[in-house]
Image 1: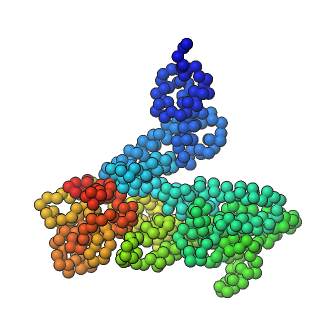
Image 2: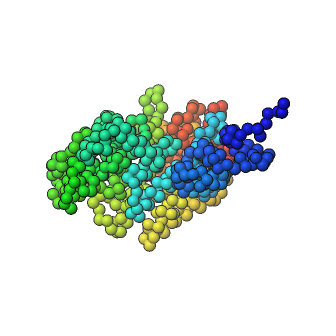
Image 3: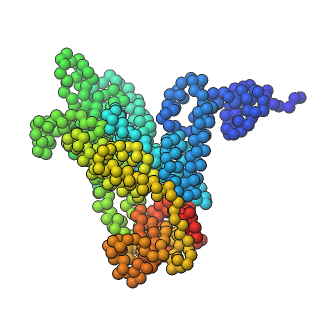
Length: 604
C-alpha cells in the first residue's frame, strides 16, 4: 500500500490546511512542488491572511470595499506583503526609539505616517510581558506612538472642517475621542458601526417603523434611546464628569452617559440612519434636536402643496421622550434676555463646526470642575492615611491632559467662539489666544507632534509676527531631539552627587513622590531662577548637587539634594505609568528604576 501523501488530497482541502500554517511556512512549502506553488498563490488564501492577521487598516486601502468585492479584484498577496513590510519598519523604528533618546521625532513620524497599518503591531508592543527587560519603556513609548497616530487622524478631520468639507457629525465629535483613545475601542469606525447597529436594533424592535409618520418616528426613537439608557446621565452629581463629553465613550462605554449636546448628537445620528431629518439646534446652555419632515411633506406625513417649509418639531431626548413645545423654548429664551430677532438663530440648526467648538468648551469646563473637586491632589497634599496619593490626571477618565490638548487643537484650528465675527482677523485673534498653550504642550509632553504643528499650524500664521517665533520653537525642539545628549560622567567633578538615576524619593518639604531622571554637580540654572526660587537661602545653597526629577503629578522639577528623602517602597501606580519615559523597568531587588537614558548618564 502506498504511503499517505498530501498530493493525494483535493485542492480545496489542501487550501484549508495551508490557511492554518504560519505565512513563513506557507512560503517555504511553496518551493517544494509546482502544485504547492500554485496553491500558495491562491487569492482566497491571501485574503484570509489579510482578514485574520490584521484588524486595522489605513483608510487608503478601502479595505471594506475590497473584502466585499470579488476576490480576484485585489492582489491580496501583494497587500499582505506590504503590511508585513510596515510591521518590520514599525518594529525597527520602535526598537531605535527605545535604544536612544536621539532622533525620536523622525522615528515616530515614520510610524505615524503609516497610520492604522502600524496599529496591529503596535498594540502587541503596548502590552509586553511583565517580565520583559524593558516592560515600562516598551509600554510607554508604544502607547505614545499609537497616540500620535490617533491624533494625526483627528487633526485631519479638523482640517476638513476648516476647509468647509462635509464631515459627518459623529466623526467631527469623535475627534475628541481620538485624542484620548489609547487601546480602547471608540475610534471613528467604531462610533459609526455602533450607530449603524443601534439603527438596525430600532428597526428590529419596531417592525412598523417605516410606516410611521415623521412625528411618530421622532417620538419612537426618543423612547428607544431613553429606554435603553443611550442618553442622559444617571446621577445629577456626575453631570460635569469629563467622560460625558465624548460621543465614542457614550456609545461604547458601559455607562452610556453624556451631556445634552452629545445625547442629542447621538439621537440625530441615529435618526439620519433611519431616514429622519434631525439636527442639533443652536439653543443656548441645553441643546435640543430640531426634526424636520421630508421634502414635500409635513410631520404628519401629509403632502404639502406650498413651497413654504413646514413647521419643525423639537425633541430633548436627554430629558424626556415627548415633544418640546416651541413656545416653551421661546419662553426660556425670553428669560435669558434674548430678543425675538435672535430666535431664528437659537432655534435653527447648529453647524457641525459650532458643535465641535461647543463640545471643546464643555470639555474645558469639565476639566476645571475636576480640578475643583480634587484640589488637594494638585497641590500635592497628603493622602488619607493608608491610601495611595492619586493625582488628578491618574484618577480622571478619560485622560485629562489629552482632553485639554484636544480642546486646544480644535479651538486653534477652527478659531472662533459662538457669536464672534466670522472674519480672518477675528479668527487670527482667537488662534493667538490658544497658540501659547499648545506650544507649551509641544515643548513638554507632545514633542513627537512637531510634524503636526509644522504641517497644520505653522501655515496658519504665515505673514504674521507669530510665525517666526513658532518656527524657532519647533526648530529648537527638533534640534534638541536630533542632537546627542551631553554625556554626564561620574568623575571627579561629580564626586558630590550622592543619588543615582532611578532612585525613588519623597520631597522633604512638599511631600510629593518622584524619581530621579538626571543630575548636576551644582545648580545649573540661571541667576534669575535661583533668585526666584530662593536657592541661596537653602542651608547648602547653589553649590550642592541638583536633580532633574519626574513627579507623580506628571511635572518635571529641579530639586536640591538636601530636599530629597530616598524611599525604598513600591512606587505609586501613577508614577509607574509615567516611568517608562525614562526607565526600562522597576527592579524590586535594588528598589530602583532601571535607567533607559544610558546615552546621557552611562555610569548610572
